[in-house]
Structures are given as C-alpha cells and as structure tokens.
Image (cartoon, rainbow, N blue to C red; front, side):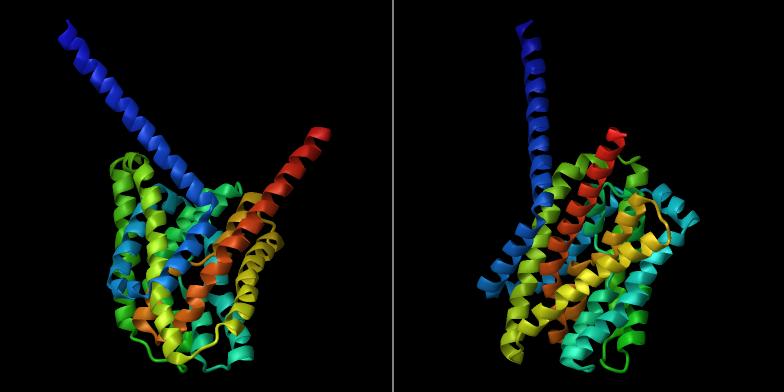
Length: 342
C-alpha cells in the first residue's frame, strides 16, 4: 500500500514543482515586458563595454529567427484569414509604415546630414523595416485590438522580402548600392520561414504548443533581444571609431522621427473614425519597428554607417511606447469614471 502511495505523492510533487517553475518564468517574463527599457539599456551597456561581442555577429540571424518563430506560435491561420477578409486597416498601417514615413525620415535626415549621407540612408532604412513585434505587447498593455496587431505583424513580416527591397530601391536606389537579391533571401530565412512554421505549428497543435512553450519562449526571447542589441552595439562601436561620426546630431533628430511615427498612426486612425482599440493598435504598429531585423539588414546588406541610426532608434521607441500606453490607460480610466458618475 505504501509503495503505491509513494509514486503518486512523488508525481504530485513533481507536477506542483513544474507548475511553480512555469509560473515563476511567466512572472519573470511579465516583469521583463514591463521593464523593456532596462533590457535595452543593459544591451547597449554590454555592447559598449564588451566590444569583443562583435565577433558573434554571425549568431544574430539565428537569434532573430528564433524570436520570430516564438512570436508566430501565438498566431493562427484563422487570425490571418480574418484580417485578410477586411484588409483596410492592415493596408492603412502598412501604407503609413512604408509609404508615408520614408519621405518624412528622408526630409529630417537630409535637412541635418545631407541627402547622400549614410546617416540619412539609415534613418530612411529604419522606416522600411517591418512593424515591430513589440507592437503586439504594447497593444495588449494598452487594451487595443490584439488580433489586428498579431496579423499586421505576421503579414508585414511575410511581405518584407518584397516590400523592403522594393521600397529601398524606390527611396534609396540612386543614393546607395545594396544587394537586393541577398536581402530578399535573408529576409525569407529570418522572417518568412519562421513565421510560416509558427503559424503551422499553432494550428497543428490547436494553440497548445504556444501555450506550453510560453513560459520558456518569453524569457528566452527577452534574452535574445538583449544579446542582439549587445552584439550589434559592439559592432557599431567599431564603426563609430573607424568613421569618426558624432552621434549627438543623430540623438537630437531621431526622437522627432520616432515620435512622428506614433502621431501619424494615432491621427490617421482618429481621422478615419476607427474604434478606440484600433486607434491604439495603429498607434503602436506605425510607431514601432522591428529594430532587431533592421540592425541585421543594415549591417549585412548596407554600408556600415547606415546601421547607426537604426540601432539608436531602440533608445527612443520603448520609452515613447510606454508614454502612449500610459496616456491611453489614463483616458480609459477617465472614461470609465465618467460613465460611473452618470
């Protein structure tokens, strides 16, 4: 009798321990999501003070591919199809991302650095890369339309092998030489294939694999973000030393460019009369870019100095997203308080 009780007790203890570990990992991930700016700062500091990390640049595409796969595990084929049936908002977001923002970036960059400067090219490149995965998180935290954010990220990422080379040729073609074919192939490997694999595995497991892997994928993805930033900051430090470029003017102009993206998303959605959750989603989707992908693209396919503004955009994106999220929640609480008073 005792022999039968002991295995059952051990099994229950094992399950309880596994549950506690999973909850601890989920709490760690939630903490990291609330303090993303600390991860960004830690990555910048590690890359700056550990310049030898630039020897690991070969690892960055693999880290990015893993992050893309982990994100796609929460997206179903049905989500993508539902938005594809009513594509107006998604097309509006993609248009604001890749048609409206590049001329804005070029105008800002050309006014300060000149139209043929590699810094200007980098500022434009920062507007051509896909919408940031972090827009899903900020949409969720601001009580926005999460399925819209998920599918926008998925579709923009899937289209990136076509959109990025095409828009780079349209906006930068006469100013810079880059290998469009290699860029397209690289984006397929980094973004398209992991996204398709994640959606397939989600549907195959009916979402179970995403739920089971969430406690592990969340913290590991944050560690990947830190590593990607650190490795590429180390590479950027070498570029700064070689080219003797002052980052002070770049730091002065980039907040204007990043803030403009958020405002264009917000104002466009309000002018179109979209419901509040979609206004919030559009604000974050237009304001946030996949800088991890941008860094990889800039360093692999463009002249080295173009990566400088792409990397430095990281410093401003998350704090501005946090400000908008705080403002949206204050408006929500004020609205709810008004309704209760009535």
